Image (cartoon, rainbow, N blue to C red):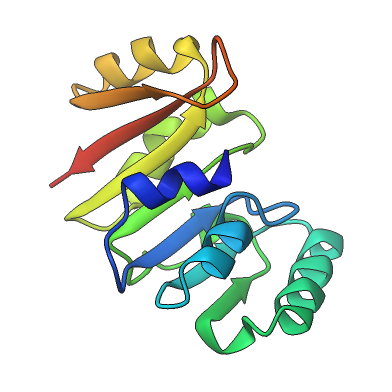
Length: 145
């Protein structure tokens, strides 16, 4: 699922991953794409420690930054892509993520059909791509600005 980003992110991209958790999708993507830089934003201190160790072990520390606080408390990142896969209360936080994301950028959001209505309500145009091996999980590609 994480490598689906390969079809949507160009070379030398800068990605901000909101709610990084266990590092999906950004860590597998960084392994596959050695020219990508990422900011991983994770509010859980315990998960942030894991991310820091995983990135160090994989030799990805020089291309990554970890912000161990809620994304709402982080400055807007210098990124041209924002990803989010498993953020708590995602539907509720979607308008906040969209407002917080830099403009211009592309948001790459993983989720089910239940994301369509909130994206429509925000008057955002998006493309929806079925994820490999799934019947109801999608990658939503949303252009901002």
